[in-house]
Length: 370
Image (cartoon, rainbow, N blue to C red; front, side):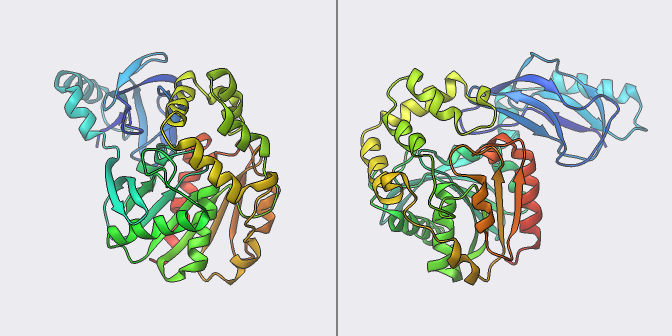
């Protein structure tokens, strides 16, 4: 009856987080998935969601506390549970807490390298089940851009997040959109997955939609987050600025274009992206994709009109304050698609409004055929 509200593990490298704000008072009735607190990691700030329904009986950690992954933030229990039992739960947890073991219990994704005809591709995996959801990141991103979504979307299914070619620690050999689409199919083949749900952000949305058009038998549904391919307009200064940036000073204002709240871009996030950009082959890969997908500052592949012939369910999520691809492109969504525009989000609502995106995608997948 007593449930732990623990420090989650967002991403492979996360070992601790700092509690920046409680969003719920003690004594508040909460439901599964409600956002309870905000936690700052070394890279981004995210919301901790409730793992259970009940009452927030105790806020154990104080604002400003640094808590190890798996550590105790709060306690959830029905209102009728006596305070003495809550006290005993907290004391027993603290006495038994072992950081290494607790981190394992906190879950988080596992990583593997999959060998494909496209080259070696890194894949993060979380959850289990025959129902499979594949997450595809945007231009210059990687699988860990979905760090706030993996756990929330893995209930009852297997979730895979890929480093597409040219990105993360995957092969840096890439030519065009077709190569990205083929790489996704090859990962499905390597994992013996005949059909999967696809969710894609920005360029990853374009890749997901293109695969659904070219191989519809492999795609059960599409969840597209600020997808490319719905119109010609794109912020060319963002694309060029991302590729050209060499220093923190040059890169930080470019990354801030991804969010409605520029304060989300931390020094650690900037450093992480710079480390990626300094890898051998990255600039060439990004330039190749720029020439193929965004030549002359315009999107070269506009496929929105073709999506009307898709027979799979489609969800489109956009941030109203998107500074990279206009939110007005959401109007080009297929007529049967569900469209959600989030007022306080920018180009990366899956990171900036992860709880809402997780809720929307989970509801969507619950109704989509496998």
